[in-house]
Image (cartoon, rainbow, N blue to C red):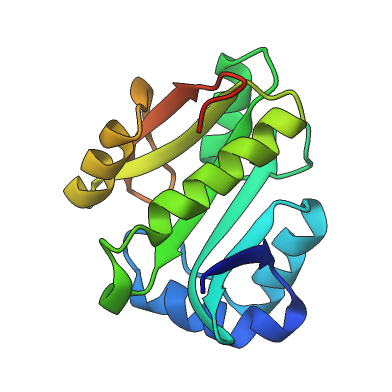
Length: 167
């Protein structure tokens, strides 16, 4: 049975391994950065089955002290409360089994509990990540804008309006 629960320090090794397998589509993490991010928000989750981490999500609320370039751009564009998805990674061997969708449903419910009616994220367009862009479109995300990042990537900034009772 799949469980979605908060990220714990004991999960770090598996999360870092998943992160490494997903590059260049997500920013690289090391142990120190993962610990720092965990300290900025309580929105860090894992999807696990029988102790094996099959996916993870790093999320932040609009008012969290996160300093990611894309997050700061979204904060300047959206005055209302929102929940930002910084990274979602699902283990390659279990992609297209619904784990990503389960993580997003969990994140949507957490956002609504905090009275955030927007869910935001970014997807790389350079280097291209068409599978992620298609996934987000299927979930109802639309393009808010784009950003050329300082590290040479281009990203599409996405948003989704949340409604009570949805998800």
